[in-house]
Image (cartoon, rainbow, N blue to C red; front, side):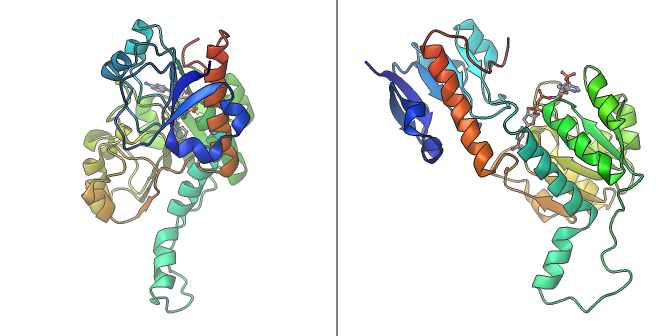
Length: 312
Ligand code: NAP
């Protein structure tokens, strides 16, 4: 008999038939509520909250195979209490997300949105020595908040740009320091010394709201802030005010506190590069993410350990 599983309908085009072998799949569109029933696995997108209520509605559930590396959409404590395994999709999205972070860093530093708008709107009046002057990267300081897989990949890409690299994380990263020359600093120094501050920590009770009116005032005047981690690390209204008052040089965001809504004041603020959460959006990466999520389901259904549990 095939095993009944719930899989996000949006993954259908990314999965091959052999990855679904032995599964009786119910495709669950993102806008539909999580149903009640006897499914034994669920493969959600990061937009689906899987908490105590949902877990209770799925009494036979054995695994939540999240199709993302972040798992702040899953109540892992409630899952553990019900002996439900939680897995994520680490590593395969690291390069794609680091590349997109660099897309934002460069777009902010060289004022790409303003430049594109100038040309597209027909307002460009020709070469001018002071037209759209940006930030030269060489010799500046890149600060990383969080230096795990993605933070380190962003840092390693900074070496050929001639940036000095500093990072804040809970534990030291000696290999990363050796390869990139990065120095570990505390949060206060990270805020005060970064010309570019890039966020790469998960959303947790400790990191939520970390960028707020107080911490924004401790950043260097004219600094660039980039966030490809999770939106709720930033208080969006405070960020909009910092941009309106020209205290920051530019902000590049891929993620927001209440996606797909963006705080109207932030959407209207100057010097922003706002992307629609596409950090891992390459063809290869999205296929690999879906493949790992389903491989985790298949392993657990065979009675084997999952490939990528969030807790070992
Ligand atoms: P990771 O390898 O687990 O790295 C997370 C880093 O954050 C680690 O260095 C960790 O420190 C640090 N950290 C955690 N809590 C901290 C705290 N309170 N203070 C300081 N540092 C803290 O995760 P990853 O694979 O790099 O992914 C990072 C995040 O990126 C994910 O959680 C996800 O939310 C986001 N993401 C977004 C996209 C997108 O599409 N935009 C794509 C992929 C991932 P330790 O190493 O010392 O524990």
